[in-house]
Image (cartoon, rainbow, N blue to C red; front, side, top):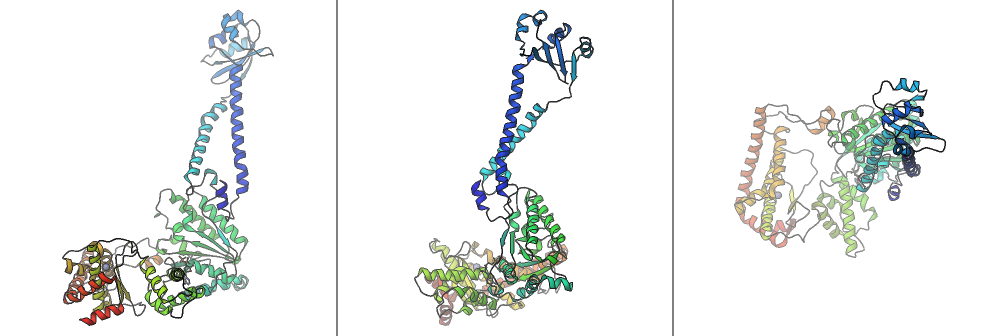
Length: 632
Ligand code: ADP
Ligand code: ZN
């Protein structure tokens, strides 16, 4: 228990010292009480003589009863000390225990005897009626098993380890509030997110000077939602806002609210706001908002449902309740805005959205620049070139790349990180760690070689496809057995139909090469086929690129659903249209298949040659590829 308390040392809202003192005390108390009650009843049992009802009646008629207490089920009382053996047989009379005060307590079972009261009156016995009072037995029958169960349960939970807290840890949820009085991060640390930075500048201004804004009566945003893929710098940006404004930064993660005890998350949210308001102006950052802000009604896990809903409700209540004038601003991050409860996005809550995209070419170069500040670079390192080779990588990936390069250089005992280190780090980060040790059998290797050669050649002989930078059959990561890396000349935001068709061709290149060479196909093309199909579907249903279906768009994209507040994609076309769409997708793919087959058949010698070089050298770079093609 102590070690647990230690781990939670940063949790400002825990009151462990107080709780810790109460806990053993409480148990001693309960135990003492039970012991007391038990000994009492034992004492009573030992000093009281049980009588048969007939014996009691005999004694009553003989005037030997001093007093009785009548309850619903028993008659108890005291007998006179003398002459009992005149009424009862000697053996029974001797069994009656008498105290020093001359009275002999007895008890008997009460039977249905309507005349009893009259007889008691006649014998002039002091009679006390008693309400049913079986508090002891009630207590033993109900409370004891419950206590026992509680005890068993809590000790089981404790043994269960980190996932579940012990019974008395209810108040200490896993959801931890982290408070940093200053983050030490500025906008200078966030590269390539100019628009997002611009939008958050206003928040910084407000936090720096809430008075001025309040006086002018401007409406201050309460909540800003930062939307972006993992690793695009959402947390970094939120910290930078706090850093720029010089205010404390509270952070909490939505996923930590998946608790087992209902009500804990809500309490935590309440605490969070209380604390934040004390130190305002400040920033509250909720990471992974989707984990707790999932639309009510589509929440997943059993049991987690109520908890999540309660926590979400509490968050909404707090957001509505507090006054922005005090200078508390809530930033939240998510990469799945479409599943958020619409209530969260209403005005007065997270009504501002800042999008963080994966960085473009310039952005990537800037991010690399930020991260190489701490690295000793050799003069041959060209960040622009690295940026060009890494389309699609996020800020976190690029930070990782720089770190990887520095580690490689250190391992090789270099003074500076040079171009070679960066090249290798790039390869690693792009396709996962090299796994040279992984054994693949020769046939598999050949299949992969022809497959990749197929992708590469189709890309080479399509006017609108990106240029091939490198082909490799080194197994990397978990899924990919090889890869063909294409180098786009620019980041593209608009693509023409001809370009999309060429892309589909390149995706199919691997599969078609397998068909041609082996007359058989493998599972290696699964991802390619998925990508090709998705692209074809988009062309037909969203881009209006199908002659037969014309310009109609059939599926809304997720982003517009978010703002429309709908719960998920829905179909607003007929069964007949659905069939047409499917037919058109199939047609696009079939046509692509024919084109690719033609291309590769025509260049069969080149395909074989490239595959063999791949089998031999494992990788073929741009220059080697050019040389191969020139041989023709
Ligand atoms: P997210 O919260 O979006 O998952 P993070 O903010 O945690 O991503 O980013 C992880 C790391 O990636 C950061 O600590 C930083 O080193 C790096 N990073 C991400 N985006 C950027 C960026 N735009 N500029 C500089 N570094 C970045
Ligand atoms: Zn492939």
